[in-house]
Length: 132
Image (cartoon, rainbow, N blue to C red; front, side, top):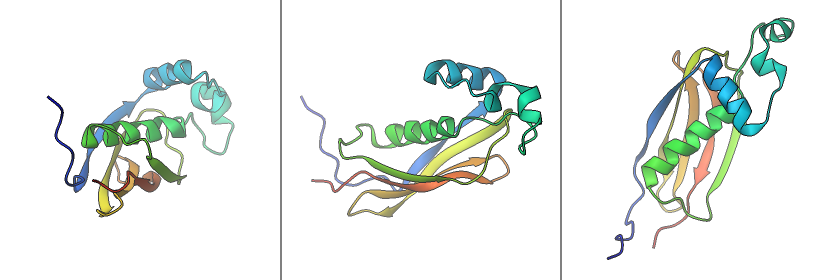
């Protein structure tokens, strides 16, 4: 038996949430070997324009990729993601990632990562390609 081919992309990429506390940010730093003190050192980050540690931008982007993977089950080889990192997110913030289908013919979604206050931190598009 084989899975049936997809006949349509889902209208929504269901949102996933993550509480990006210091422990999650430290684990992500370990995973990516990105130990920039702007993410991990409160004293260092406090002396920057951000005033406190911020999460890795790619942590949010990876949450969006995980949401995409859950929505479409099998990610096509031609997946293309184009995003802009719009604002820093302080460590300790809960982030939410998801998206909405913009073009069914190309499988293009508007994707986002936002704070619990609805402030967009990452925004852009994900194109999965044509079905069939």
